[in-house]
Every structure is written in structure tokens, then in C-alpha cells.
Length: 358
Image 1 (cartoon, rainbow, N blue to C red):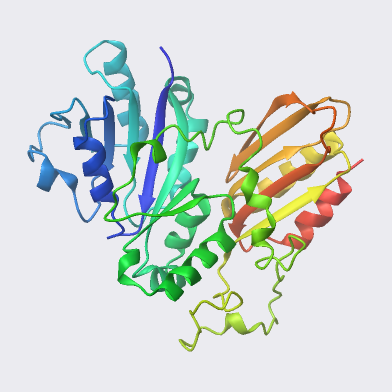
Image 2 (cartoon, rainbow, N blue to C red):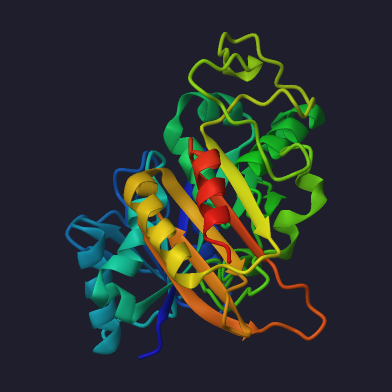
């Protein structure tokens, strides 16, 4: 059986996840989609568009989609869906998992790597995060879950943009790209997103986007990282103005008035080749210590003794790598890596990566 592509949909309460899901469940897109819903969500889809029948866990929709509420562990639900598909009891092409508004998508994503049975049946496609422009500033300031959801995203959809001034929206976009430069952002109305922007994005497929989002290292992000991919490293005694959460912040469009979010991105580039054994030892040690704080990390690596690119990525403590295509004859060989995490020690990372170079 071909692997079942799966999308994780996350976002804070009221950001429009339910509207987007209703659209996916009712639109005639010719695909049969199974939606797996964490039922502690504040707005259950069931109440509005499904017949609420608590005895039946799986409800068939008019356009052939199915909706399924998690009453047990996510792994068990995914196992059971895959088995029903194998036996021909259920017909669906892909799965969308809606996490609750308060969830950290990390453990959901890890299920696809850690559980052998899930890994043999499913392919994690991408994590989509909806951000409510009207309430984003407060949510991002006050809730780490909201910041983590942004850090994990392969793509960010900003909803309710029509409710805020252009200057405020601009500031939000800058803040989001400061936290996660590798996720393209789009402004959407009422959660109305074209299906092509939601499915088959290959955010987790190591070989599908070998250039690793070519835009994420472009210089439009230079004002976030002072031009060298280096952000301000805060020590405990740091008196950087953005630490003072006294409500007197300027959330205007001034690019340098960011709240100093604990979720930050850090980019490392080098034209020198990596020594595979040294790099593996260093990354293994870093993941061991900082794994829970490392949300997503990804890169194209120039390795000693191979003519091919090495593509690597990880979520928390789990990382994997794959051989990509050969370096082109005129291509500049260099490594590019991006790390997105919570208060990651950039000086230690940079030093360790430098020491892993040949």
C-alpha cells in the first residue's frame, strides 16, 4: 500500500482551523480525506457539520471525506484507519490531523518517525499553522504554545488580517519571519485557503525540496539577523530593551521593536566541507541536551568525501539525513542550515558546527 500523506493543522483557538477544515471536508476537490480531530478542541466540528453521534467514531461525509474523533491515543487511531483502508472498509487518500488550539505539534509530528507501524503506513507531508492577526500579539507574548506552533510551521496562514491596520499586520509578518524564516506566509480570509496551498507541500520530505525553501536565506531577512545570520545572543544579565515586558512595547511596524521571542531561528552557512563523523557526534550531543527545545532544524550539507548533497532535518530529538543529488559542476558548494528552537545557545551551536568542519 502506498504511504498515506498526512498534514498536521495547528493554530490558536479562534484562528480559523475549523473554517478551513469545514472547507476541506465539504469542497468537491475529488480527494477523499480523513480528518482526525482532537476532541478537546473548543469548537468541535461535529456540532456544526456532522451528526453528533458519540457511539460512532468515524463519520462519512457527503463528498466522500471521513471525519474521525480521537477517543484514544493518536497512534491507535492512525493504526486503525490504516487497517480499515487496507481491508477496504474505508476509502480515503490522505489524512489531516487537527491539533487542539493549545497543543504543541511536536509530539504529533514525532509519532510519524517513532512509531514503526505509523511510519510504514503514513508520510508526514507538512505542518500548517493558522495565526489570528487580531489576537496574535497577545497570544505570542503570553503563550509559549502559540510561539511553538509558529516555530514548527512549514507554512503559516494569517487569518483576520482585515481586522488590523496595515502597520500592525506588517509588524506581525516581520515577527513571524524572525521566529521562523523557512515558512512562507499567506494572508487568508475566513480560513479560505486553496487546497493546493494545503496539501502536498512536502515539508518533511527530504528529497522533494532539495533546495530547502530557496527563499529562506535571501537577504530580505537581513534586518532580522543584523546581516550575518547572527541574532542578538542574550545572556541572563542582558539589558536588551525587548526583554522588558511592561506593556509599553511598540508593536508598530518598526522592524527592531520585536518582543524578544524565545522561539528564534538561527542560520549557519559555510563554504568548508563538514567532517561526517565530527558533525554526527556534535549533532548527537546537541540533540541529547537541547532536543526538547529544538523545534525544527533542516539543511543542505556539503560533506567531505561525497559528490552529493546531504539533506538533513529533525524535530526535537529525532533527526534524519539522506543523500541528495550531485553538486552541479558550476554550483558553489556550501552548507546551509537553519535551526528553529526555544532559547537555543547560538554561540555553542556555531562553535560546535565550526569545529565539525574539515
